[in-house]
Figure (cartoon, one colour):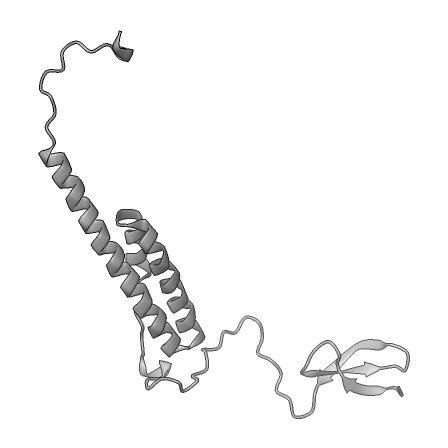
Length: 148
């Protein structure tokens, strides 16, 4: 290959100089290509148009993350785990700009959250009922350890 400027084999937006024997450290932008943004600059996610509302319109999806964590600690935790997973997925989809995906995961998180809370309430009512109706002996006498 003769020496000259060629598309850089290591990047997709630069050209690198070939000496005829090896690549040099010299680079330049490819003609007609925009350089990528600097690493520190965050760009908002592009709107895909899949939803009727764009992120610029202020579309916001509730991700149910905090209620899922509370349900994980206070209610029926096996049912709160899917709620937590779907709420995290909803948050990630919203960060990517996928509003429809965020809504779907948000609805799934809400379903599992309601199911966990309902089962938790039923369990707490049952425990309260059992504790309220169970009689405990008033005088147990002199009990010694291990029946001695």
